[in-house]
Length: 262
Picture 1 (cartoon, rainbow, N blue to C red):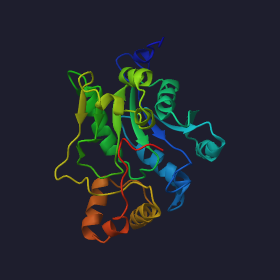
Picture 2 (cartoon, one colour):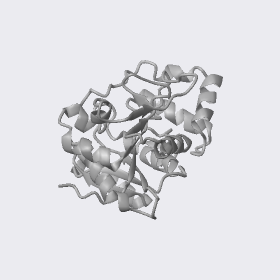
Picture 3 (tube, helix red, strand yellow):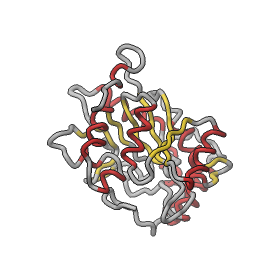
């Protein structure tokens, strides 16, 4: 039986918001990508650094597996002073749940380590929508299977520990265990799900890293900003408008869906 302790965390009335960054060394298309160099910093560090700028976060924790192959991630986190939680390799839902539980989260922001342009302002926006809703949302996300308005690579999901615990206890489909939160948005008769929108829609932009072409694009973006990581996602949109040839770098990469596993 689950002990519902998370509502007691932190100051009275304060909900502890924790970003959980999923990271693994194994990648079918680009092995070791999470520690690939981006203008002098590992990609994982770029993700944690940028997420850590969000004002609505109380903590950021990296969630990797207990496999020996992921030892370099744990060592990198130790050397850079990042919190790291290790868990199941195949059951990512369990890994994220355990990382959030150990961090005493009330609210979880799920991020993946292959999104080095993750935006702190967008994190704050999503957390504010989640915390300020009345009646409350179970999940706030900026992309869902029916569509997205934000570039691929800014993906984030915000949910409470209670709905996350329900998914952890009840989800059985392989894609639900691997992609963590499909159980919530596939059962909308039970869960209140909200999708963040943006105009104009920019979901055709690809800023995540799955292939060497993606990594080349991201390196060019950081090079343009001189290696800084304090630029906003809208500044990157402006860069793409000024340099439309950037789109061609990874235009041929096919994005995986929430039902793809492995």
